[in-house]
Image (tube, rainbow, N blue to C red):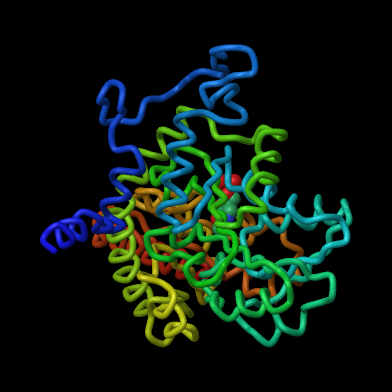
Length: 403
Ligand SMILES: Cc1ncc(COP(=O)(O)O)c(C=O)c1O
């Protein structure tokens, strides 16, 4: 009995915070190195004819990347992880498990680069896509066709922060013989694990929260389906968009601090979003952490936090340029999820590839700004916006004075 109790104690599963720090191999078994070695080798010596050490050529497999891929599988609660040179490399690989003639339903409100990849490239090769508001379950049901093979969602969506029901979407797709693919970039595995809610495949732009420092491009696929793992790895090896060893190491290092960074992003975003709501120059703030966000309850039921992304409508589009030129703590740059706060204007940046009518129907208009709240002192971020809004008032006054 005593022994049994002891065994139970031994197999205690470590919490997410611990797993993030240690990965799957907390030290190098040969040298004891605490930091995962960077195997900066394109090729590996064969110990004999027809034999390998498990590694042969780094486009297909590399020890540093393998440790990162196993860690990603672990923290996304999947069986398999694959690491790519960018988020787009990962998304492009996922599509290749389908074939020409297949139909995919896709969130209309999603990263513009994904829209461009699907609509300008895969559509040419015989895939078809329906772009709809996937936060509206009836619309998803209506969009299903006999040849529908997958639903691809971002939740929360980019940039309007709409939340799609992962559980219901997965059930629906499974009933119809399709897959649910979730781009989990905005929340990271720290706040949301779509595979636990029924999703089949998770993709990430690892460039964002996972890397965390606005210094590395990376992408991931995580899943638990045996039948698609080999096909996905073959695409990874054949196309060569695999993540380089040094970048894999940067990702391992970034993931070690994901928990503390995500907590701070979340806390800061809530403070900034609440402050923005009190501002005269702001028409509306989109943040799923607000109790009056239309899908707040749903968000609470499938996430452990609301994340660091906020978008907002200004009352006057003329303020956009003034804000972008006035901010100094917040930087005017694309991307998101790093330690530095970044502000973007989706209309001409992240979502410029999306046709006007579709963009407007999704809510991406000339008044929309997107803010990736960093981990600086929240008071400094707010003071920076406050100064920018004051500047807007001065500029408006000057315009009104002109005859
Ligand atoms: C939600 C989301 N998915 C995917 C991507 C593409 O990732 P990457 O830039 O790493 O290729 C982005 C990029 O901004 C994104 O925001």
